[in-house]
Amino acid sequence: MKRLIGIICVVLALTLAMTAIAFADPSTVNTSVEGTATVDGVKDDAYDAATALEFVQKGSSNGGSEVLDDPIGRAYIINDSEYVYVWFEVYDDSLDQASANTYEQDSVEFFWMDDNSKYQIRVRYDGSISADTGSDWADKGAEFVAIETENGFAVEAKFPITDVKDNQIEMTLQINACTDGSRDYTCYILGNDDADNAYQRTSRDTDYDVWWTLTLAGEFEDTRVDTADLPMELTADNYEEVLSVPFHVQGYMQDHVNWSWNSAGTYTSGVLGDTLEISWDYDAYSFDGYLTSDNTSEWTSNPTFAISVGDGGYLQLPDGAEVGDTGDSARYSFTYSDITITATGYDDVVISGGTIDGTRFTIKQESGYTSGTSKDIDLLSGILSQTGLTLEQFATEYLPNLTNISFSITFDAYELVTVADVEEFMVELDAEDEEVLASLQEYIDRVDAAEEIINNEESTAEEMEEALDDAKKAANRATKAAEGYTKATAAADELQDRVTEMTATVEALTATEEEEVAEEEEDTSSSSSSSSSSSSSSTGVVVGIIIVIVVIVVVVVVVVVTGKKKKK
Image (cartoon, rainbow, N blue to C red; front, side):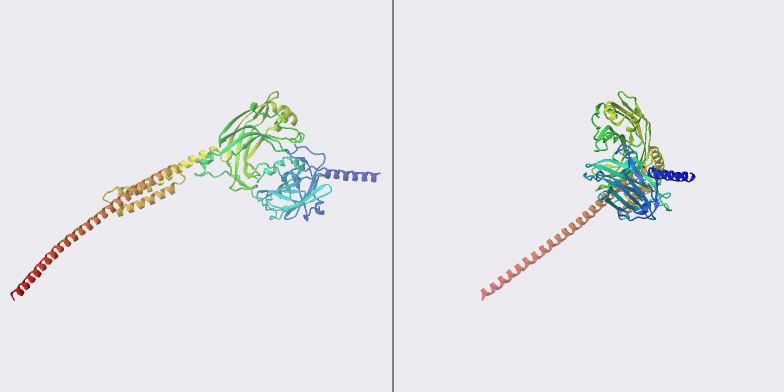
């Protein structure tokens, strides 16, 4: 009998153990086991010791957060000294890739960090691969293979172990379940349904910290470098721009089946330090028929009904940005009051106020639009929980009677810099400005001295030129020293204006002297010409007289000769 009882106890123990393994509830921290695998889509023996991570949780948006009766996939994770290996089996008897959008084709997505940048790789059941971010995955040593199976398809992957902290890395896995050219839902391990937003996390500074961590087998040195949580440095060149950094607030609704977007609150904007008093009146809005059983997957996929708080168009992409490229990045902080939502026939819904503290916006070029520059304050979950309504009741009964949403929101900080910080900097800058202004006196004195020489009628041209040259040097040095300081720059600009006037004076004096010299040279030339002309005239008279005398002599001689001939 004792022997029989012992056997029964052993059997019960094994049964409980097997049950625990089969129905393990993975948390947001999972543990790897040591091993190496060949990436060919076939499950190696090395995975046998790994925990089976069951994918039963629909996404918080793409599927409405339900838990499935049975898992639609299981993943097994191992690692060696260089790589993490994942063997992923998906159960799907109707594989589909009819949509032109890769995320709406049956596939598995892998997310991990490398040098604080997100890698998001999508592997479709036919083995084709697309990289939403991290297109250099092959250069990093990553490998991905997919094969079709009797139950659906299997994906095997390996990617490098990077960004280690406390022997852990950050990652997540996602199944895209699709039918007839559209995505029915996304699926995750239990408790990780918020990973619907995993794609929005571009770095650790970005919001949407919805990835889980993997505790690695073995010992690894920390290689993760976290960004220092320091405010931006204010300078004379940027402080005025900081004061004018904009932000915006807008209400919106969007389903997660066909992604139809609808405004649900006027776009309102302000700048750093502003407080916006918001009161959206919904008499002019019509939500009748906006949400249907079709665009909510038979009322199982919650839409987004939220307040969007964003950058107001301040962050920009580089010229020629292509899909997947990122641009400007900055941290934003906001404080908002309680949000009161009123609807006829219902008690007011009040969403508690809170903060959006240091969230990082990074603009990214998507296909036809940009992302990464706003943060949502969810309204739907508060409405459903406080009213007890179902999604269908919310759509057909509550929305048509929505009358008003009221709250206030303040833009507290940009890059962890507040208006008070800027004002304090301005006081310090003004004090420095006064000091620099005082230091310009030596240059002012030099310009004064030069001006005195130039305005002195007894100064020679050479003295004026030397004075002007020194004044130019003094003004230029003053301009350089005053850079970034308002009062000092004004004083330096005044010196430059004075130097310009002195330059004009010296040039005018120089031009006058040149004219006088030219006139003297012309007078001298004219006098010489007159003298030459007079001399020529006298010479002509003498020559004329000589000619007359010669003629007379010739005539006399002829007469005498002629007279002698007649006497003979």
